[in-house]
Image 1 (tube, rainbow, N blue to C red):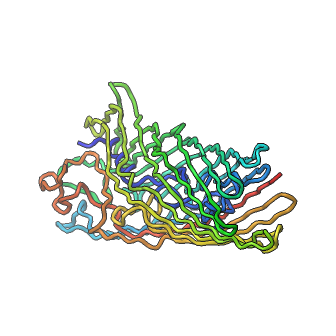
Image 2: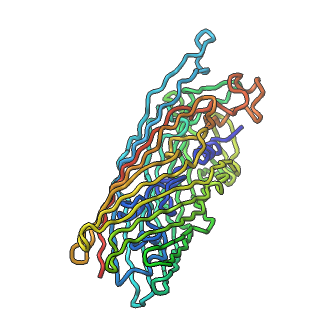
Amino acid sequence: MRPPARWLAVALIASGWGGASLPGSALAAGYFAGSNGARAAGRAGAFAARADDLSAVLLNPAGLARLQGRLVQVGNRFSHDAFSYTREPTLDWGRLDNGVPPYVQFATVNEAHPFQLLDPLLGFASNLGLRDWGFALVAQAPAGIARREFPTDGGQRYMMVSREAVILSYSASAAWRHRDTFGVGVTLQWIHVPRLSYALVIDANQFPAQVNPVSSELDMLARVTGSDPFTFNAILGAWYRPLPFLEVAASGQLIPAQIKTRSRLSVSPLSPEIHDPVVLRRDGALADDVSVTLPLPLTARLAVRYLHLRGGREVFDLELDLGYESWSRVKRFTVDGNGLTGNLLAQRLDVGLIEVDKQWRDTFSLHLGGDFAALPGRLTVRGGGFYESAVARRRTAHVDFPSGAQLGGALGGSVFVHGIELAFAYEYRFQPRVRVGEGEAGVYQEVPGSQCQPPYLDSNTCHPQYLGQRAPAVNAGSYSATSQVASVEILYRF
């Protein structure tokens, strides 16, 4: 018997938990989405070489050494994140009519809360009177989608009903430069996760050779909610200017960090005819705690920047960034029940240590963007475009976040008035439609009491229509996603 807590944890991590704003560089794959900072976002993320505001703490801390005097930066991102999923029609082998399964079609489901109004950044930088140094303190919610919710009775419910992430990072950075030739810098991060929540529907059916690919009278809503007060991370960066008009830069997140939450599990029946609660215990006492571990990838970014100068002043620049994230490092996620046992429909079930293979792949991204001084000292305009490869293979596509390839562009600008800069940007992200056929789908319904065991070939315990797989696949269908992001910031230099 597979315990409900174990299978909820398996569902959580096998889904490729798409955290809303998990920390890292401003790339977009796996947990990440978009760019922090209006000036960086307006260049479509091509900012690692320029790095001349507080976005540098993530993209390239070495850039802080070129800041003059003191800088206060306050900003926010507003986004509309649309996501739709239409499950592939399927035969419902759980409801036979004279031995014939009905052919069931599913309505398209859409993200219930597409607007995100709070994704802030607040920071201060200064050279502390040291000519070739720069220091910064920054608090921010790294770029991402904080909440996603779908109908409990929708075609996606066996993958996910809802998730929520409240994740903050606090950064302290220092940088040093040698004249205008090269610079180095480091950012130390405290990652604070006040809340991580994930919910999906599981089928509590325990009878041999039975399946419910569409719905079950024993459907239950399972939810994990947890937090992680502290995770440490660090980012290193450098830049080099071999010629007055040319700069190259590199940065990376080099510590193999992971978020580990202390979480609580709840399981509740969806049918009004089921009155027995699911009781969880440890050593005979009531308990509901589990721990969830999510590794973070290593990242790297290389950049080259061209500056067009006139009279020693920059007229425009053009930058190309190549990003890399080692999502292949995320081979599995781990959930630990810490000796927890559950009682589900009179069955006593143990919760152990679960290691679930994920086998994500490394991702690459290209970002091209630049600034143009339309009215020197008064108005700057900027723009750019990007491409990011898919983190998940098509067979494991999911509704928790857009896991396919990403394309997009951005426009922005800055207005300068008496030492104050008002920066703004608009960014559009688009995932080309991903379609997964039933024959290739690889995300399976969670059935905690299933008697079908590996290698899933025993027709006495496994349904004959699903031999060779642990349960019906539930991620076949069509996925579409777009994001529109507006960023606004005030920068005050003094």
